[in-house]
Length: 124
Image 1 (tube, rainbow, N blue to C red):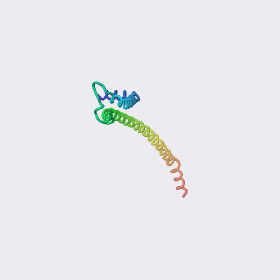
Image 2 (image 1 turned 120 degrees about the horizontal axis):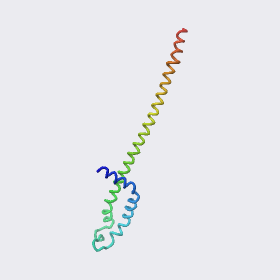
Image 3 (image 1 turned 60 degrees about the horizontal axis):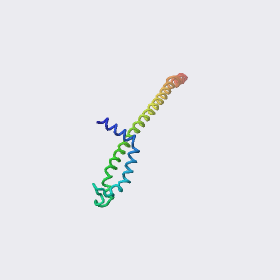
Image 4 (image 1 turned 30 degrees about the vertical axis):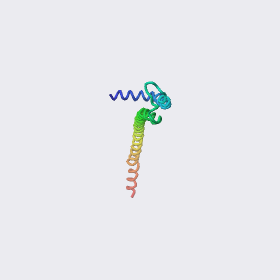
């Protein structure tokens, strides 16, 4: 089930421009369609045409909004994970650099500073 949902979302991502364009086109054409007097259905007697069109198009727009928000959140999650990996890599580099500095300081203390201090002690 999850694979089918992911396939559907990938399809939506690939065709998002077509979906948006068709939704916008439907929203603009809807008043014309719903004000025509057709034999099988008549929306001219349903009250305010704006209420009728809003009531019919709102579910489609809301579903589209939900899909777009879900896609935006999943893309944000991917970007956050990528950024976390980059930060972790930089932290590892910094830890390595600091460890190298620590090793250099230890080496300097054991091979240069301590022998010099001991030689100064012996002079006094």
